Length: 280
Image 1 (tube, one colour):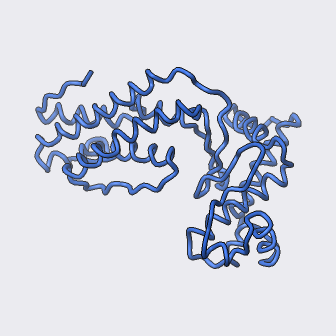
Image 2 (spheres, rainbow, N blue to C red):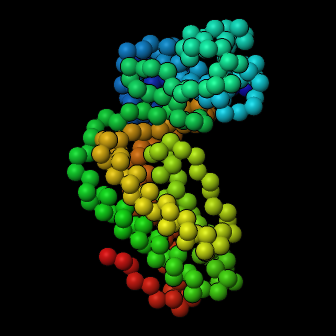
Image 3 (cartoon, one colour):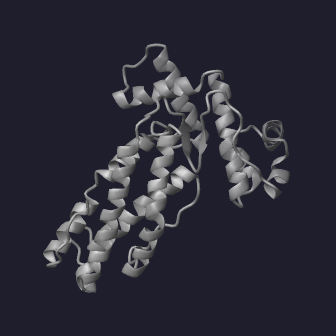
């Protein structure tokens, strides 16, 4: 059975093969990802690129899980634990058992600045910088005001209506998803963990969450602009069918309500007789 390391190796081999002109079975999206991978490999051989990223992922598992070191070494594709331990000490300065007791960053220096983004992602550096971001930050603030207003307006809706399913979703679940999206992108930018809200999250809890995470979301969008990271991309490189997205795409999907979450919430409020005006 293929391991996560095998999936990464396959992805890199396809990118290198595409560079040699064998693009018969690729799509535009795959080509773009391949081009970014090749750019990120600058200064490293494909083999070194794969080995480093596999070791970064293994180091993250050593630091954050209770899996046995032998199991981690096997999944990473090393021929034996001794080989894994030597490579680990060479790159991270300590044996896996020692490093687990006092871990530091799992990132290994790389000329192309491509690194593992846990649990199974690969972060690729931005190709370009967007200098004027004031409008995007303003849009982020307006989006937070919309989510806040919808959560507040939902307080006028009886609980049975909050949980009445329409097209497979409820008003409560739509609002929960909207708040969770703010928290998820903020955590990704700040490289911190995030706790997903429960499906039956009380409105009072959602109000507290959006009041807390809303300003953080706006700050995160501003930080992306200030540091030129809107084009920074993420690839599910350790999975069988990797997909790619960027911070810019994630922000755009959130601000334009691409999945229709807020549209559903507004429709449900109107159906319940709650008048609500879109904030300026």
